[in-house]
Length: 378
Image (cartoon, rainbow, N blue to C red; front, side):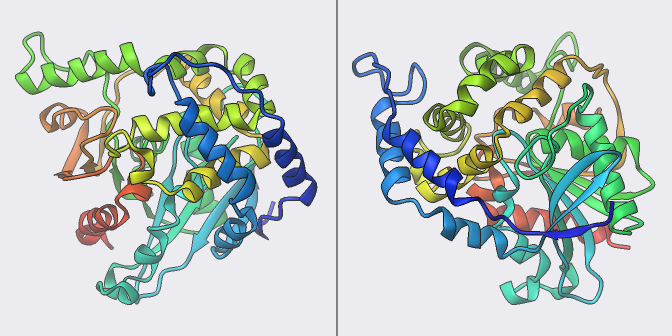
């Protein structure tokens, strides 16, 4: 199917239904003075929902999203939604940027301008990119997979076909975080003939990687992962084993959906335990709304199931690889360990930021993307 323009137009009836659900919310109780220890804090969520009901302007956010040229196409039966912005410069480099969960293509809206039009932002026009930001299959405005097997490797194949077959690029760079990092690295592994380089802000590594006598850095990283598995990975176990069961609740309750997602934005960002120090309420709710209006929370969570039930044996990526490691990322492995699996050409330990780098530290991420790909341009 040919590439066709797309714009977001949520029906008024969907917004009216949301208003009614917010107004009729049934709130759970909470342990006194528990803060966020048991999960999303009740007082905070009530304040956020009050703003969602009475102050949030979806139509304004819709206009923001529609200010970027959006398209849809179908590849091997899978519908894909994507932003495609041409670069302003003498020789823009095509760049595919992939998001993860519980994010969306909206995460990238702050970095698209500086990457596509560097001259306007005071940088060298020779560093321009043609930027493509897809919604992952089952996320946002992309189609929902109906068959098993839509895992990281399959998504990488679809995104390769999007860039080469649908958009006509012979070669391109790729960047991503969260699931996007896995997709980006898989592109480098499986399709090196098309990739000039890959850049990630999260580094997937097997927790068992390393020697029998780990270095101090490796020990610290393993302890970091152990603590995450103990205190923060419950969502992953549920979504990797019973995503359909959870989907009934989150697809039916906007407050439940917001609680599930905002908890991760607070826990995984460099916000000093105050989520709105990093994200505005409009940013948090726009991301939640993309899941709500498309009813894709269930289909998005299934990626965890597909990953859990896929064979992810160790692999090697030989194309040039860049890493921007933000201090509050879920996993911050040592460079020496990552270099055994990836062809690391640039590794930068960032001074601030967390899991949602493009929203949290857009200027810093743009700088790293430009710097890494500068010498890789054909």
